[in-house]
Figure (cartoon, rainbow, N blue to C red):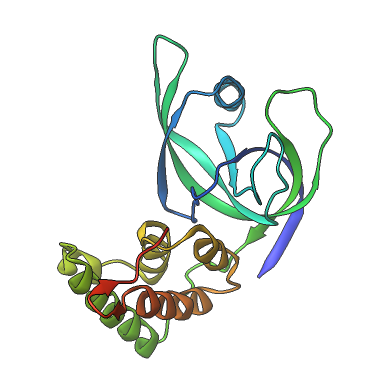
Length: 206
């Protein structure tokens, strides 16, 4: 894993909404400051940096890692709201927050260049698929496993990381994993933990 030069990013600190590289995140934008963020992004490079806040309040501290998304789809509503879809492009590491006059927050960050064509060992892929099937069956999810089997390793790992019903802290840990293999191993552990039964009650996420 290598890092590039520092870059300026406009951030959307949204608790529980994590974006992973190559994945898609639909968002409904209604707050004035984030409508301004989307308008600004559309006028420039269509990029928005998703990052989780640490706690609540008007300006909570931020986690150190997020993911930059490109606005791949946009619907501008008559009242100024937006429906958008972000496509994950690159993880980033927060360096410092900037003092800006815009209603939305901006940071200086390092873009994290993950290795291209990163893959899992056959045993890692098999363990991930096996635990995913077990979890889906236990939770009653309908999954097209034939389509899943055709996904490349990155799409499979990041797809599960984004859509699985883990809590925000667990997903943040997945985003911060240093390699695809490390992320896959953590997913297997989380699927096992959150798919367990406690008596007649399933482990659920609050």
